[in-house]
Image 1 (cartoon, rainbow, N blue to C red):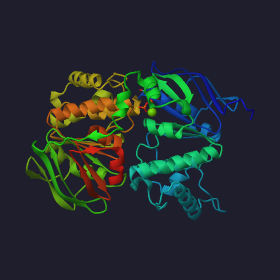
Image 2: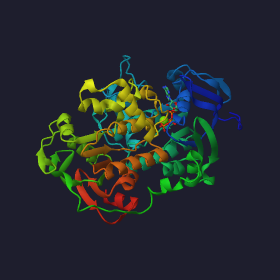
Image 3: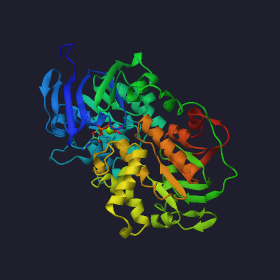
Image 4: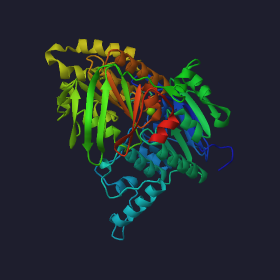
Length: 499
Ligand SMILES: Nc1ncnc2c1ncn2[C@@H]1O[C@H](COP(=O)(O)OP(=O)(O)OP(=O)(O)O)[C@@H](O)[C@H]1O
Ligand SMILES: [Mg+2]
């Protein structure tokens, strides 16, 4: 290849969905052997541009050149054949296939009879996963694994597919800090072997650490591209959302003084909750008007604990009291009747992608009051109010939910609970996939719910999330509560040290 010709070059890209512009005149260049970081607000157009490169969107205006030659992909298969692989933001793992089949999807080794060579496939998949530091039986069904492992398996599939261009759309959202470290080491190695990578993330520290070049998107336009050595976090935030917002991100990284509320009424008590293999002997109190953070690495049991508190997972031992009365959380209906609400980490489970935004917001209302009460116009009015206050974009409640960007879908998931307030609100990974501005919106929502006297429980594998939201923090380790932080100064380092 000639030295001056970039590996991939896009010029004047435009793309709209039903008359709404998602990309406007975007130029984008990816050089050979670089890690190119992409940042921008929710809905800025990052995934859309990458889906054009990966052949998912075949309809667009503008030109794409691969090693100097114009290309036009009609399908993801076309792009794959040209050496482009993408890990999508929403997991696309095939739950019923084995781990090995997922890792080697489309490139399964065959034996001399032309049939899939299972022993060989299992061995190759096992070796590739080892390189990512994953120790899992490749014969297990992928759907049975925790989210973090599923994410790593998808990454392995694309990373070892031999693709020259590898696009990772928010690949670390479900990973623990050590897993992220291992992934970054591997990305650097893959780059040094001559591959080019695009890395999309809302974690600005990560973007700064792993990228060689950074491009900022805003409102469907490319704002600026610069080598990483010339820029810092403040520079990025200024271009992402404008000057004067630098303190947003700072608040997640500094030292935090916690303030518990020992005099407030206890709304929920858990005693000795146990589910073998997931969590053991967990006891805790949640007070009115308090945000209790539960932090732990992926697989430490906190996400399962939250599901158990919502009646989604049965308990082997232990009891739960609400306002001092023992409550049997035999299923989610019982939990809701008791006044518990839950926003899970996986949006796929609770939202209806084909339905309009307003229907998704009003689902919790329909649960609570007679269907006869609800008229579509009333539903729209309520949804509209939340869409405005949460700054959901685009602010169009009649659009199918599936057409919103990832971060905006998460806001819809929260909006569901704002009309009829629960006693206890369980939030699992509430800001996963959100840009700094959207995270700040969630922070405001949680604070206003706290001011209403609701007990809020935030469980997360992201230290930043717990630090920015919680008044008191429990750290879980291998299914047990390892430490409590209350009325003291805490930082990311201290949380990690306890986990
Ligand atoms: N399939 C689709 N149909 C209609 N509109 C879409 C579709 N996909 C994306 N959009 C719209 O295009 C715009 C850009 O979305 P995109 O998913 O590219 O954002 P993003 O930068 O990846 O955001 P996030 O950080 O939240 O993932 C948004 O306004 C979104 O609503
Ligand atoms: Mg996206």
